Amino acid sequence: MAARRFTRRTFLKTAVAATGPFVFTPARAQGFSWRRFQGKELFLLLTKHPFIDVLEKHIAEFESLSGMKVKWETLPEIQARQKLTVEMTANSGGIDAFFTSLHVEKKRFWKAGWYHPLNKFLQDASLTSPEFDWNDFTDGARAGVTQPDGSISAMAAFIDANVFFYRKDLFTEKKLTPPKTLGELEHLVPRLHAPPSTYGIVLRGLKNANATQYPSILFPMGGAYLKDGKPVLDSKEGIAALDLYTRLLRQYAPPGVVNFNWYECSASFMQGQVAIYMDGVNFASQFEDAAKSKVVGKVGYAMLPSGPGGHVSPIYITGMAVSSQSRNKEAAYLFGQWATSKQNMVRELMAGVGVGRSSTWDSAEVKAKPKMPADWYQAYQASLKIGRQGLPEIVGVTEYRDIIGVAIQKAIEGAPAAQVLAQAQKDFQDLLNRTEN
Image 1 (cartoon, rainbow, N blue to C red):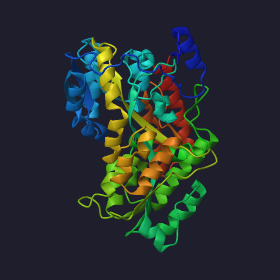
Image 2 (image 1 turned 45 degrees about the vertical axis):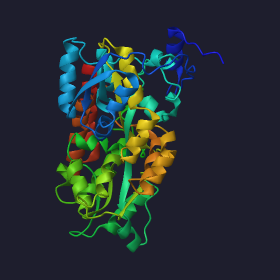
Image 3 (image 1 turned 30 degrees about the vertical axis):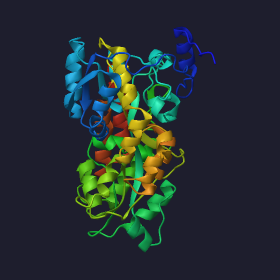
């Protein structure tokens, strides 16, 4: 079968016109070899992360497979971002590939020109293994690594989806089932609230941190960050969402929740103090760890409740990117391809780390030795199918998180939702004027 050919003009025209993530029909491998660049040495800048913890254990396998030597440095996320910025600004060319948090870096790094577009590599049958299968990644994962001009900046690695955690024992005791809608959630929480032994719900309250959990209610309520490029934080849907989010915390969360980050939320849930918790699915492995948790075997996992705006789960994507300054771009692409291969995604899932591929969830290995309960896998996979990028894809993501985060904190403390969102709307527009033009 002849390979489907794309000129640059045709590709960009198709990508821009597409309403969803771009779908490749790659050519079958003609002369593909993992050892094409044997003898080369790569340097990777990696981020401390559960996905990387698993990956590092197998890098020697890639070296054996490819004949290349791999050196890498793994740093906490903030330090890694700072080092990358210094190296790229200096145009050192010393980094070949890097682990990227696209929910923070996507637009900023793209605008700076630090990502090498992977489109041509993915279309090159001599560079892309026939086993890789770009279309095996979920729609949300592919959309999350694709820029407005259609260029692909990374290969999706870890996909975090917001899900619903609940105490099965408390629900059973009261003959309750996980809520299907936000309306059901609002009626359910008071029935589980019995302080000081048990609080009905916990969600992040601390500014900036709360911005990634707020869309678990904002999106299903029909709210959004931007519409036609303009901020819509203070829409009627946004006001209703903030009112619900903060009212639940003000009335039914543990004391001090206004300053809770993920750590305090997870700790209160693991200590058996809370009935319901909504957050990133990657936190769940600690709930099943007897050394840390008092609720082992008592936690249920479900999809987030839907609302008038539909059924949506905010997702946050990390990926393996090739540096635009690398002198070994094609060789670095082979590493990223291997790192996000089906085999490695199976390893990640077996370790309780989530991935954005579809096929690996049905792996016989994963089903034979699951680390997590069956409903965790079911809730996670279902959430990926309704995933939407959880933060606005703008340069000033961190600044936006502070803006909405302050509004959420003030509303938890009792300020009217409409009032704080009016200020957030103004501040958000000012941010966009400074950074997006």
